Image (cartoon, rainbow, N blue to C red; front, side):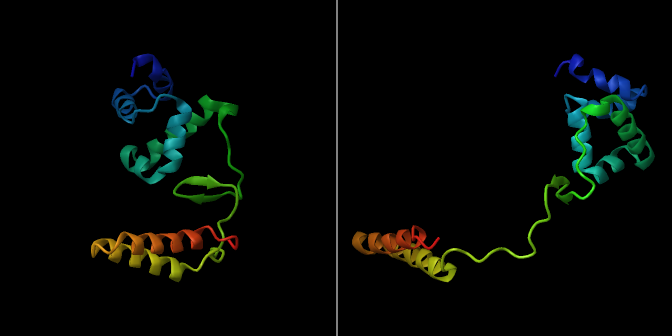
Length: 137
């Protein structure tokens, strides 16, 4: 990366050590840096110290102004990424019989490992295909 891709770093801090540490993160834009910080705030705070990390984030927000996408305050987060809605408490029921599917997978694997007749393997695979392609899905 060239130095001009890091111009925003000079606007963040006058400290040469901090500039070097920020450049080591490999970010090319202020937006990218802010997204990286928001995705992994604790490691960033450990890297710079909580006080300096907070100051850098505040400075980034000033530099970015209206260009920063703000997630709604009710946003839910998963691995630091804002989600539009709360994930469901439970997954919906599977559209196929999972026990039957798993049984067929195991049967096909055993048939192949035991070098069973090709016709028997094809028959088990066809049964699995029918299950997976069933209109009930």
